[in-house]
Image 1 (cartoon, rainbow, N blue to C red):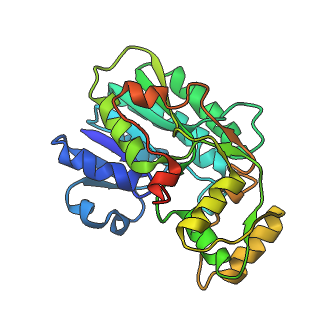
Image 2: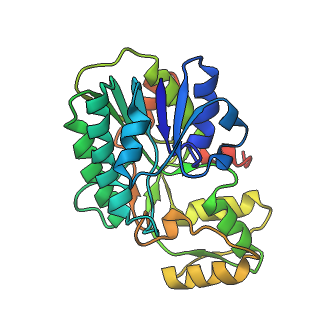
Length: 290
């Protein structure tokens, strides 16, 4: 039995159909089963959330492999970044150890260190330490900027570019990696025999790009060659609110608590993905620009 947290998120939505097609039973810890879409009839469902330790105990019962994707990029009504991040991860590891889980996979981020410039990355560093010290086989998947089309950044640039400019509220560098390539790499790594102790897999695309270049490429893929201009985070958020016709999620790379200004670049580039037989696609190729 596999347990997936964050199954309805950007990566989880891509990974879950691969897991349910693999033949092993899958259980999902969710607050709203409707967000699972068609997959909700193919999985076991445990209603609950990361802030409730009783949910974690129920969810891990009878499980062999925990796949922990869930996190919060900003404070929510149900908990802070830390409560839904490192604290929840630590509690989930405790529940997994108590339940006799054999394997634990955690999805983190490149640039997650104790001295990182954002709360999210600092908290992920604490969570990584908890995972590495667990008493079971663990793997941390450290990701650069995961992207899909559409995703929150794509949607925000689409809205803003309609009114004339693309705001760029930060100067971080990333190696964008397509969610499908992340899912493929995870499946390939999970097919290997579990190794005692802790492993770290860094998943990054082949292009190291700053936020301005990423924004400009997305604008070009939309057929809108707008100037990508440096702005303050406040201006970018205000422009997004005015440009969007409805509620639009703030991209993590525009969020001062999340990834704004981060350096999410792997020293080995795409080496870990290539070692798993996955060749990550270039950001511009995924956007259909080359």
